Length: 327
Image (tube, rainbow, N blue to C red; front, side, top):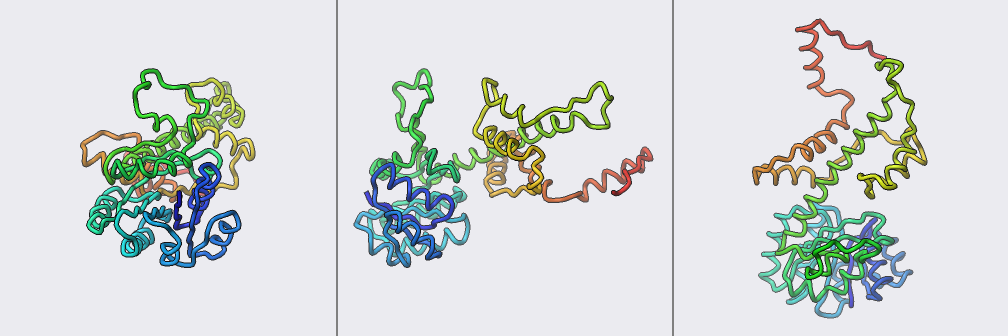
């Protein structure tokens, strides 16, 4: 099959590489960076100089995978592609788009006869090697037509044993990709995935911070432990009940640099955490952990907040508590 890829950043370029390597599919690629296009062309892709040129190099029905940052740049690209494509062509948004925007786009494109799939894509920079977990929203028939593409991108079953009771369920799920439902549902599921990711990451971060400070001067001497947190991260990977890829990445970082001095601790949020919390509010679902994890990221961007100053002022007022001297 042919697949066009628009956006050759950390994930887009590897999506093109993986469908060629694991599925033998042809790719046509475009990026505003001519160097990125040339790099993929040297690996077997067909390069394009514009979106118009990209469309001209595809056979109908065309499939264009957009892998750009969420927001105006993706909106603009999809709007342009919608005008260039024809009936039965397909636009895939594999970025981290807000799911309600998918519903709006899907309706607008359907009026022109162009299909739209929203594909929540997890795998990051490791996707070329490990494959991508995909959550796909859109028409069932279109998803089925493009199954060879998704199968090539997916990680496959690997050595993970089958879950008991799944014998008669959708086998694609065990390969690492799922048709979640209509347009918008793919990015909705990916949004919640990322919200959970925030919570898991925060739990690991707080746990390791407690371990690191187990030898604090504030503790009685007999209660202090000088712990090797790099080794603890490694041992937890092997037989404990809390292993994960996130723990693997943590263990690797600590093995290289136990004090993590090259990291500032300033943590951005990509939007999905906020959208997850908003969805919880809309559904009246309690989401304390995910909300706290999002707020912790906001907190990481300030040395001291005004709220903390208010706390200090109140403590001084009712108890005469003084702040420690500034270093």
